[in-house]
Amino acid sequence: MRKRISLLAVAGSVALGLTTPAAAADPVFPLVGPSAVGLRLHPGTPAGVAKESRLVFTLPEPAAGDAAQLPRGEVTFTVDLGKLAGIADVRENPAVTHPECVRAATTLVCKDPGTAGARPGIDLLIGAAKGSADGAAADLAVSATLQGATIRPVTTKVSVGGPDLVMEKLPLKADLVPGQKQPVALAFANTGNRAAHGVVLELAATRGMEFVESYDNCVTRAGGRTAVTVCSFEGDFAPGEAWELADPLTIRATERAYEDQLGYGIYETGSRPDAASALSVPPGKGTGRTLAVKKHGAVTSGKTATDLEPGDNRREFAFRTANTADFVATGATVPAKAGQTVTAELGFRNQGPAWINRARVGEAPVAVARTDVRVPAGTSVTKKPEACRAVNADGGERTAQQQLGAPRYFCESAATVLENGKEGYAFELRVDKVVEGAAGKGSVSVGEAGPQGVTPHRFDPRTGNNTAEIVLDAKGGASPAPSGSPSGSPSPSGSPSPSTSVSAGPSHNASTGGAAGAQGGSGPLASTGSSAAPLALGAAMLMAAGGALYVGFRRRAGRGRA
Image (cartoon, rainbow, N blue to C red; front, side):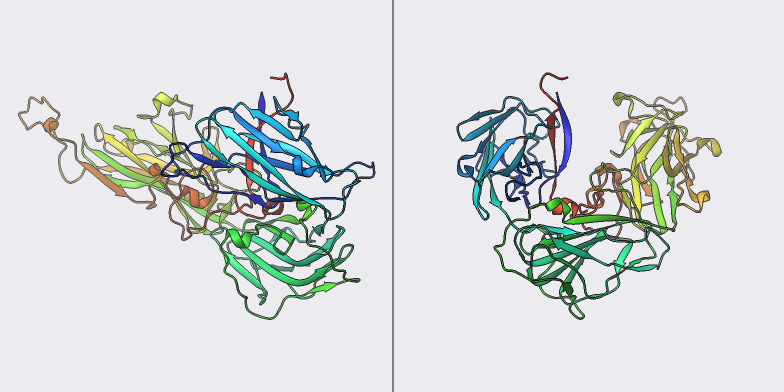
């Protein structure tokens, strides 16, 4: 059977949104694949064979909230190789073998049977053909069919030869304290066979890090979790030459720094869908003097082409700053009488000073915190938040049919919690009877997820405020008598139970999913002062692997294997 894979698609990937035309009954899906790929001259390796690049084509993941779901059923992919004769050779990726792929004349046809929860796709390798000329170019067309849907084809421009910009690793210090600064000595080279006409430097720093200087040829767009700075440099950057910044560039750990990342990359001007475009960075100039680079050796002119090795255009670096974040549990006191259904909003807030981010490039989101809710005695949960799951009193798992009426719930947070951020989970509780005193109180605890609940975070210096109470306050009147009471008092059974909603904690209602999408992780998140979408650096930056989007689809480890 096929295995799932998660790829960083080739730089320049085309990612169009999922649409359903109003006049059409069938959904329309665009194919997702690279818009261009550059190939090294043949032979590209010491062994005398072509150096191959990877080509991935998939159907897109549906946009959040779109009525059209992931396509189901067998998808037939057709790769038109006709225009590549004498220019490039294409074959199936042997590490990701596809079933029922047949080469017929100038086409390659692959059938993906389709499996629920997986995205259909194909994985290919492409290299320059023997005898291909420097500068040769042609289009590779890929189409697909699926019963009950329309799939828009995609065309990839294939070219032989070109520049190959390589970003060198930075000699940065990883362990910092808030306020500490260090120089960013960026250097890059062109190892291709043609000059690059203008280059763009991209720097993506997560929330805890910031650049000190500003320059007029650099523009910065700050989001909720990441700030992307784009600097443009004119001129020709010849093959075989290296460059470095001629002016100082300094990075500083801010007061909110804890675990942060820096992504830095170099690209030929116009050769990739850069983070500036994705972040809607406006055209124009920044402030200050012009940031310059030092050039070494003669500059030669050449024909602009797609970068030959996009994967070495960028680097990443992780920082660890000695800092703390105080997570405070938020309980609630709810006026309640027997027979009522009330709403209690529970959760936690981060009193800083640090933000906590566990979104990492190429990794599944990891919750920052777990909220452990112990339901007050005498009450039953009639509605729970989506981010919370029911457990037994000892923390043991319950079935899907036992999610309501449980004595305890575990709620997983988003992968990012900003300084001064909040997480809230709204529970609906039916008050079966009011239990007075300590026996009738529930609790809310926040911390690191553990086998039976939560343990204190290592970054939290104050664990005394990690637990708060849930109190059902019966003051203000006697509980109504139950239906059929011999006391002769009126029975409330003929009218609906009154509902009360009181929140002593975050304003976010986690039962509706809230702002989880804005924070880039699983679980809801209250308003944190930012609505910026997450970037692709962990779920946090758009810099990864040449700025390409993530694509995931099923693969086959080999024919005839289960």
